[in-house]
Length: 261
Image (tube, rainbow, N blue to C red):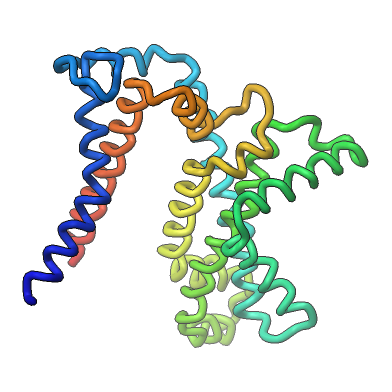
């Protein structure tokens, strides 16, 4: 019985990571057929870097993710401050529900509703003029803000408010208290929220597919369009590079945490 849990855990990890390992292996496949091994080669990595469509989509995705995460941090932090520090007020349950709704709302519903909103706004106000990077940024900010608000709100709840009260007793204004005391205390939550929002925006496919337009295809959209016609070796190479970046990031974070401990 003592071997049951290790065996189940091993099978679970094998189920999760075996496809990733096979993907990395076949990214060095000489053959254009991804299921037939034709020898070792790195030519598909060269094809990947020479593909202008993937390069443009990668730059668009990074730009959208960085801007969306920054806007989500600002709006999500304000929402968390209102929910934690303003106590009970009229409309608080409605605000709390609206902030957390994107967490449980299916992405298809979110994308469709935002598409209808943008189309209606364009007809009534003339803005936004068409769909593109701007509409994707607005859409990603909406659902990323919910995750940021939850992360920051949990940090504010655990924060000792006596620090802020002591600073105000000494004559500090509320703005000074926020930037000198509150902001440094919740800084780890802000960094975590920004990274989470950046990852969610970079990884999103469903919402971006609804609100994007010509010339604004993100990297997940390009990958999905290529996979629909059959997995190509350059997609395996791209996925392998993403896995490498993620692995290096996790290793670096683990080393930093271990050094601090």
